[in-house]
Image (cartoon, rainbow, N blue to C red; front, side):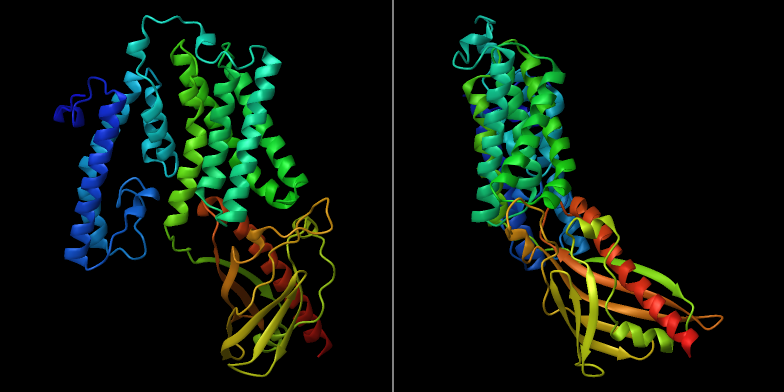
Length: 461
């Protein structure tokens, strides 16, 4: 093994497995100690090695809440040479293994970069195989050769991987993160594509169909095994299907690049990558972001009348919204004990009450409250009497909320409801699309009810 410094800044050439692993290890150790020293000396803060499992380099992605602007700029500047070297090493390793060079982009994708590292550490150097036979059966003679046989095995192996990973991630580690929602679907598509095309060349369409079938059957298996309900599977499906297709395309590209088809080493990549992704997320504490949803409505009644209905309101009629009929928790009525700051408001939902101690009682302008207790966010659809997956407790919680009443001309009121909440499911931006729509629908149900009550009382008066 011959290590050359020029491998870290020149685009040309190739890097075999041993130098790649050694360089990657050395650069990681150097980068970590440099970051740790700078953060400690200049900003008097500890830097954890597990931060690298969440982002490629500190500063390349969004700064954490603990980072000051200067710390962010410094870490970004220090990261750039290492980012350059890492991209070049991946590019040369792909070139040596005769794999698609576009896979280099995975180096800057959270979670998937560890998948790429494992794959490049295991992928053989194709130059050494130049004289070998092009028959794919020499690499995996134990795999089925027929289209149906290889497809069944590919789907079965991918489903088994998904079920085991889901049980490990949700039941044992209790982590609903990037590894579960992004890494596992990608690995399913990648593994299925490799198995299906190991003995005979398959078309890209066939590889994608295998990946889609694996996701559909895995979802059905989780439903039948009572690990998940219909609603959450529907929410996760778009992300899982897209990433499974990307994984299938990556696996198909690897097979298409070299006529020496999938070896046992490459088939081990998804199996090794899944525990690595889960371990990285479990060991790294991640701050949960505080999110906010604001909904407003105009009420044809004065603030004094609207205030009476905001503080406590009578029973709402059964919901007509499809979202609530699917099992999402919906408000039924609001009750209050006491008056002014320190009073406790109970907003009763279909799954239980929100307990809301009043913090600000500025009648008739502002009612602000914290949330001391959250019910389950939904009632899962299932074949069984009831299931209770871990994400129903503590993974989507309201932090605090408020009602703001602003007077409008003509003795009218602008009623604005705001909820601040957190969820511990990643990627945050994807799950935020769902949670914002759900909370907005809850706001609308409450605000319209308050509007109807206030306007009716105004007419009666």
